[in-house]
Length: 234
Image 1 (cartoon, rainbow, N blue to C red):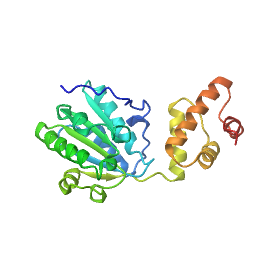
Image 2 (image 1 turned 90 degrees about the vertical axis):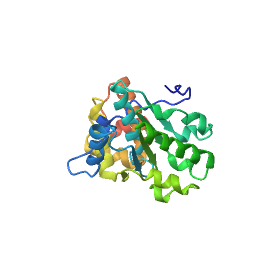
Image 3 (image 1 turned 60 degrees about the vertical axis):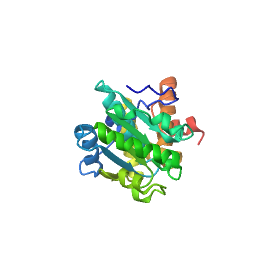
């Protein structure tokens, strides 16, 4: 088996399928079903997700890692935002022996021949071993400025899904949903106020929710607009 990477990589405990909000008729429901039920079962050796920051790509990659690990299977999450300056051949060595590898921020490898060649080799080895690769990036494979054309075609071998960034209404629903999952009540007005003031990036909103949870427990206060203003000085 490959040696586990001794690097500062930690999955976000909240990045699970259960914490990913989808509603009936949501186009992302098909993707969520594919990730949770049908994959990785060897049916699709590679799956590519792309979308701009805050669209949920990293969340779903980490959720897939959590789900596979919960089955007692080894898995590796590789965020290139953290690992891009490490030797790629060393990092990717023997990862084809794992049932699932999740590679995030693949756009950062574009134009770096050492990384592109190492990724191309890993893809070929994973095809031979029947392992599965889940890739996340901020652009579709055909739009990545890659040096190796063959890598572009390899990345597009399997299904390619685009994740749209949520609009304000969905952001409010996500914040309320995540608050509910933590046992907190966040009414519509407070959720709208938080989205309007905290910024429209889901990562920032979740960080605000962390602070609100801690302060509401500490001060024994319900989540209200005056309380939110007090916590953040707005």
